Image (cartoon, rainbow, N blue to C red; front, side, top):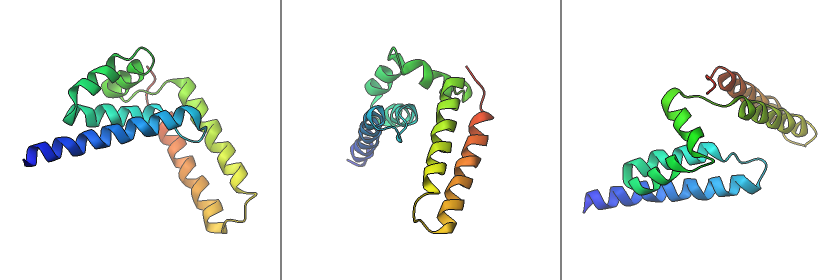
Length: 122
């Protein structure tokens, strides 16, 4: 009984990740591939067929396999993420958010950008 419940939770996380990835295909602020990587990871724990499907997917499979093998991120994705973060940080400066948010969030984005650019490329 407990094993079935744990498998169901892994599947729920995998489905939620796929749903967020699908949203990422239409919303410019949501990433797609990171959620698919998480879906493949969760699927590997509770839904092997979903994991296999994601790993063999013609478009997203190579990105997931590169991440698993070497933690690699394509240069195009690095540029896109960096430009999107810079755009978000710039737009945030023109909002009535508290100063600590307008400084803190871009600082976190800058740290993420540094981490991202330190990742190997496929």
